[in-house]
Length: 240
Length: 240
DNA sequence: TCGCAAAAGTCTGGAAACAGACCATTGGAG
DNA sequence: CTCCAATGGTCTGTTTCCAGACTTTTGCGA
Image: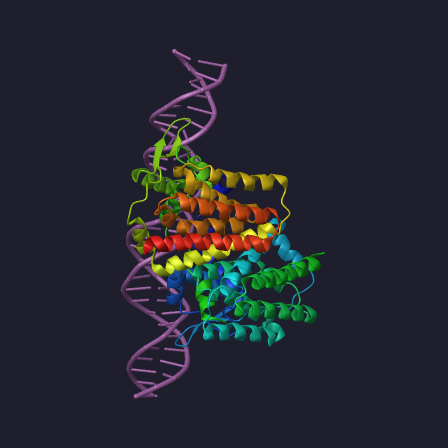
């Protein structure tokens, strides 16, 4: 069998030590806006269980994020770890820096991965009979993006994209979609949110939802391809 | 943002202890046939580095697999850990047992995940300009499955499917495809390899390759859907 | 105002995992 | 026949990580 397949399978069992992985994970949750500004993380004991790590390790990670200015930790009843971070306005050069940090190969890898996952999720979803509730959720998420204030745009865009994978009912797929999105968040956060781009994106989002609600996998696929190609092109344009 | 998205993101940092994860990973490599009967694993020192674990932990995992009869470990120059395992002929009830072990929800999850990943990979690949070398590899893998001896069928089928994700050049996608396949291997290994099913699969495989080589993402998508729906139906039939 | 419940903060002993040096075995090359 | 390189096998001290008990802080509700 292929040697490539061997390296794919015998890849690292653990990405780093528990502390680093935990910091990374929490940071992602914050940067993706899954826990928004002002929200608090679950209590340490619960969160430690969810993350499958000890409370000690979790606390180290939280302390690191506190010192880095992402969290404000308060004790006592109704205390907790509150998110203080707000995404900064992108500055010139941020994107270049983010890309240099990840490497050009990784960028292609991430974009390809995202394309495959999101196309796959959309067409799977289009092939499912959705309940009225599910259809409403999808429409709602679309409307949320369209109504978003500039500072909330990326967060709600993320929520919309992830909803598609989530609605398939596959936890594995939802996790993969979150992973795919994570790998481009830093890049997306590094480019400004401009009116014309938002308008394009809105049309493409609408096409995706329409295709999914119509139960048309092929149209869904095409809409996703168009949208993600657009995003990739935008990234490349800011890099040039 | 959605609570579901929170649980997707705050999922366990580590799946288990290093030992268990390593055993699992090696077992997968063996059951998938990535290292076939008679092959040997890389030397302990190399493998430990690849897996990102210490040699001690790796050796514990290898010893467990040796005691379980999967590996034969020989020392001295030209020694190593040789794969002794050969996939057993499926017996009646194996499938039911495998499904019970994973749970019905997990089964749906795995099948949905696989559908999304493989559809996504195939259409991404169809949209790429392939080199002649890559085209040849794909044709070769297809031919390998068609020429497979019964005992090699599953292994070469796996290799064929994984090649599609691999050829996209995205390591992330390749890893996801391997993961998706893993989650159904035990099930596939539990059903007999029957002539008519092989013939159907061969036609579907051929359609997938043809669509990819023709650069037709839509046809690729349809071919994959048809093939995987067929496999899912087969599984369900054996369960009924 | 007091008490209580929910949260963060602290401490301790032990298990898991690691890094690295060193030993033992084997089979081919000279 | 001897040597040696490649491999598995073993040992030791250190670091990381964990489980769980206990302490402190806080603010609401009786």
